[in-house]
Length: 230
Image (tube, rainbow, N blue to C red; front, side, top):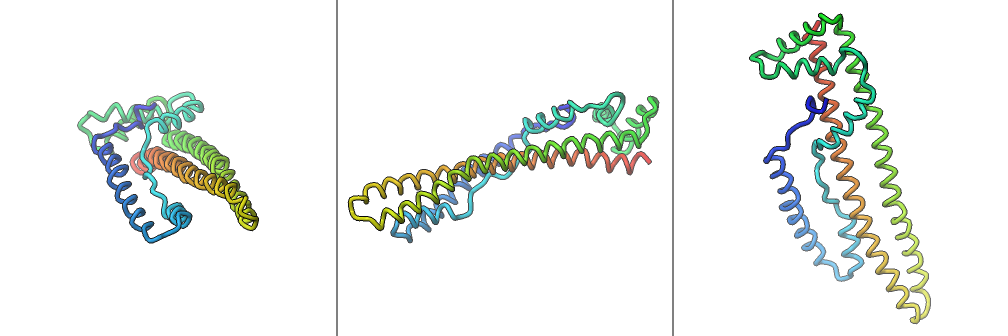
């Protein structure tokens, strides 16, 4: 089943990803450093950097994600000749000198000899799309939970520490050293929040693009079957 949907990684895709992670990151970093030179206070510099637009990697089709999604689909594979068997028949015709319409009709002719109707193919394809949609909802819920667990608690810590700092600053000078310790903790937590958000958002983007790509394959085939196999 994987061979029907997995795409090859090209040198162009690798090159594009390298450019996004090098030139783009360097350019944005240099811009941020230039902007931060206008601030005198370190806290203001840090706030400006963290409140700026986050540099995120665009989502890409990830074959490992495709495989994971297909594993969920395979767990619910219907018996008999259905959409996937039809897809295999189409795949087998890839090297034949036929146009797309002829391929779809030829594969359907094979299916028809087994008593399979167009309605059977469309229903099975729609069933597998529903499996993908269910997995998409489950994974997105899991992403949100992880973001809340990884980022939410740290943000609460930051808020609590800020309140503590305000209280400490109102006290006498002997508390100055304790206040500086808390400020260092805030700085560290802010960097961790930024890194956690960046990593989780990039993973979520990869999943979304991979999901959209895979679902589009089902959608395209459904549309073509409806058009070509009437």
